[in-house]
Image (cartoon, rainbow over all chains, first blue to last red; front, side):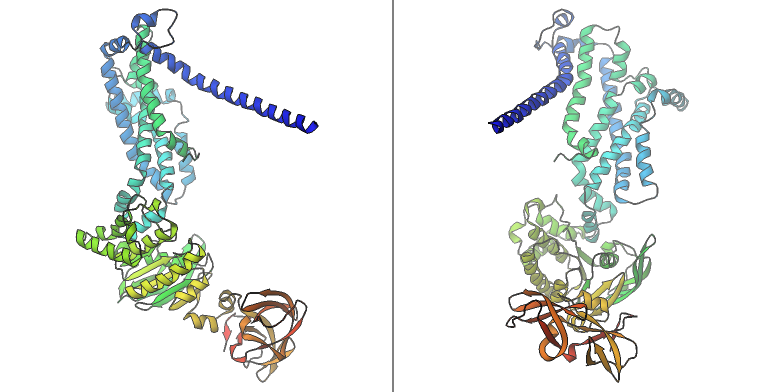
Length: 279
Length: 346
């Protein structure tokens, strides 16, 4: 009898633990998903519905808000600028970050540990602290208000991640593969292009996309360093209080969705960067 | 013709001296095995020959040409790695043909050579597979085929069989020996497995703490170890040692028995292989401690004057723990070592 009771209590505790677990998961998911869901509903509703109350729980699939957004003066230019800056950031952070990642994974050199730490430390300085000197410097050099100038700043922001992700990618490729290629007639460069590059290409793509997202989402430097050539984030920030509600929603949606999709696609490699195996 | 000469090669990693002044000549078409425990420097030496590591000092000559300043690809070598290093993004065909493509050979020549070496290694039916679809043994065959397809002067192998299971290893051992003999290349083969070394080598270089202790034929290494280390490393179970004190006129006292030995005045180590002792009326008095029947033989661990030795006896003998045996060493198989230098005494 007592045995049965003991088992019952055990099962009971397990059941409650399970409830707690499930409800925590649901709560956390809701925390993230509900705002995005409302964003989507309002974006896909007509401007009139957006301003009305109560809000609907299902989207009307009315493209009125998005059309208005597309027609808003300067919005498409800002979108184009965002893509341009993010594209340049992506290319530069890979071109600079991947060789650094390769060096970190393949060579032993003095100060390697310090170097890895310093890479992360570039993220320790708040951007507002750097914005003023940067703005002055950019005005002096003529880089202010250019897509390239902003891409440079975004590259410095994206670079630590590019280095660390590619470092973990290169470390995942056994050095013997390269050595085998060397003995089979390759020099360092051809061994890299014929053996290492094809193997890490998916990871490099992921790292590039991550750099793209970092630039895409960045608002502070974009707002400080550009005036005419604003990116979408800076443009929206500038027009936020003066624009109608449905424009804010549409703009927010356009900002969030690409970032969400990209991060979802590359999540495996981000886990790899943090040392969590997910394969 | 591809004779390999290793001249005065030394290697230091920081303050650690991995190799001390290595001198070794490997004849054309010779199968040389570098044998030693892990950390003895055998892989480092192989990598220096391959050009994957640079020697701190010394020279490497292959086929009468000094190569130590050349990149691996320009040395006329091919290498088989311990973990196979088969390229995962290429098919077996592309793997074997990789080096040939790098040499810019014509398509039909690449195809001919790939198919020939694949047939040689019995993997012709796997040519379209990727490395992920192969077993360890098959990957090993691809790695060897890839090296052979290069038709190199020298083939270097770094523990190529150590990742295979025991049965497969035995099969590959014989096969590899046959294929390499046929290919007429000079081979350096690194292993820590003395059975592999014994069964495959033309000559074995036993390495210990960054030095070559003995380089000789397998039988010579087994019968006449040049140093105590070799005697204790080669053979399973290894050689037995007992301390001996001189009794004058080439006579030695070993555990109370008087035996013939070299003319010397300082104490020596008496050494005998376990299978070179027989039960007899006179000889070393040994108390059996552990008796392990091994089918054809009995492996008897016994106590001689406080020192443990092992003897391999015919399994017809009935031996129990506690029995006192009289073991007679076969006189021509007895070896003597100087405890000061650890070297063999003639």
